[in-house]
Length: 180
Ligand code: ADP
Picture 1 (cartoon, rainbow, N blue to C red):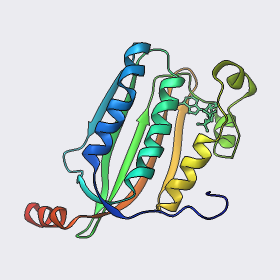
Picture 2 (cartoon, protein in one colour; picture 1 turned 30 degrees about the vertical axis):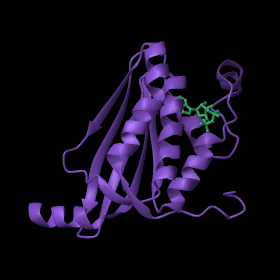
Picture 3 (spheres, helix red, strand yellow; picture 1 turned 180 degrees about the vertical axis):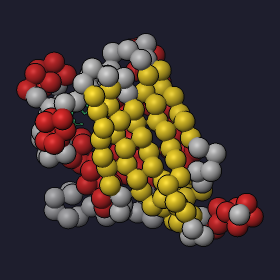
């Protein structure tokens, strides 16, 4: 759908709280089963009443968190959310999905965001997967006007982060004005 240029991005009111609650529910069982922890670190000044594509945001976070769980055998997954900048209309928000997993080497990072690429062929044997998730996530984020990047240290962990600018809901704009 993306390659055909047919994927459109919605703009509707949604609450960021909801998205995070969904992620938490979706992965609770897997996290418990692997003996990991899923932590949310959301800055106080991040607005929750946004306009944008909730479904696509969900897809991207789901993909990143699912990878983080897949490639981590002990420790924690932290989703941290920060306000990068804002004005009366918009808020630019940064999402980080950090894990304490196997990590990715520098050479592998360069190949990662290409369709069907996996860090190396032993990954495929051990963990399965198609290598499509990140390529799609990257395109979705770019369609939403954002960008994704990655920092990782082998055997220490990875930090996938992306930044997206969302329009604020009317009530959130009032809130912003009153607290400025
Ligand atoms: P898939 O998981 O289906 O192979 P992805 O595009 O989601 O496809 O990931 C591509 C590759 O990137 C994975 O096969 C793995 O090598 C690497 N990778 C992705 N996320 C992580 C992570 N959190 N930790 C370590 N390696 C990762």
